[in-house]
Image 1: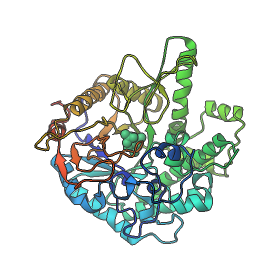
Image 2 (image 1 turned 90 degrees about the vertical axis):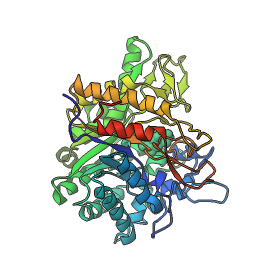
Image 3 (image 1 turned 60 degrees about the vertical axis):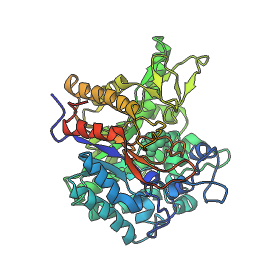
Length: 474
Ligand code: BG6
């Protein structure tokens, strides 16, 4: 078995990291618009510091980002030139419902995405749409506490009903929540949760998770009613966890770590809370509020495919003395001495991608989709402005080889591969522009200076060749 002929090669972005125009077209303010760059960013995302307004002292990278809002035609033309089959992007909830609870959608926002989809379709590029990528209308945070409230399910359903109806002939592939498991790690950054003094944060998080899981199932139900041809996927911040040693305690620890993440996909794909999660919640003395019909809704509306991001594997130990933490997409992980790291300390492990693909396929037996992968690196233009990013090519080549092996030798069913940040954009964890992933360079620095001019990097021609040969010429 080789890659399928209709393999969806492409790239991925998220609204708040590329669009800009944060207050244009009647767009409302969103959580991602009040998260500043700089030292306050991670504490705000983790819910340790609460900021629900913009102020003069901070710089907010989402406000202009790379100005995709005004330049999408030029950008999509570049993606088309590389031969993209698929472009993953997200909708800004507040472009469509500026406050989240508005009775009627904002036509200007709906029109904007319609134009973006038409532009993709003009080149035969399949849009893959993330319904929410870490954004919550600020109004809903202030009035109902975001996903801690059951009301969110209703507002999310309203959003889905609107977009599925409007785009039913333009979009086929949908993802309900970006990296749904990130809720446990970035409660504000991913889900708009703000904690009150002394409350049980885990209880709030798991209740919010329940609301998102129900919302995801309801979205699937609505999607099937509106267009049975739709394909609905869940989205996991993926990566298998390795045990630090072969000590059974370490192996057990790694298994429980993985379950923290699988928990979400177990519900979304198998349709019920797994027994280990029920027991865990019992032990934590967390009693989820469920409504009549929730369990049935979860059971009847499982996803069609499983998508995930993969940057590198994770490592854990049961021994508290082993504490060589390193960065990994804001997930805690130990430093693996067998791996190299990126300039931001993220571990590089192509074989880990094959391992993760197999683990997910063994567990769920549903088609998989790698919707994020890539190397965040410093790119330095030479005197002519050219960027020779052979390091990025090297990273991607090894990961592509790994997933091709998973398909050819292990029989994994893989729908496609969209590299993260195919055009340079704002980093989610750091708010920097200098952490670049793209095949296309965007002239802008961390402080917001630059012409926003687009330039092809060395990897541009390379990826074009990869797509054209369906992964043969690497
Ligand atoms: C994923 C997110 O967690 O990782 C993206 O879905 C993010 O939004 C990507 O950009 C890479 O992370 P970073 O921090 O390098 O931008």
